[in-house]
Length: 125
Image (cartoon, rainbow, N blue to C red; front, side):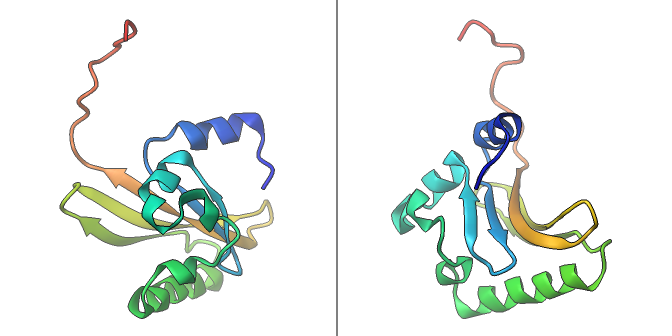
């Protein structure tokens, strides 16, 4: 997948995992955080494979249900899928659309809820 250097840098510097899929549920991009999180399942080697192969049947059905909902209306764009209390994060599925509003894929968005531990403006690291 060809990304502009600016967008690629935004995705690759994010500390949260980002996995982008097309409308056939093929993984077309993983940022380094996602590859590390999925290291035991193959990490970057998952690019080009179906996201469905990484989930159990219950999760596959949930992904399909959300994907169908995204396709119903252009305003259907984000769904909270679960909260992981172990690492205090919420996970969402987010629709990706082209300039005309056509659904072109989706990604998983992770939002960690713990207070940041990095010192503010710590430029001398």
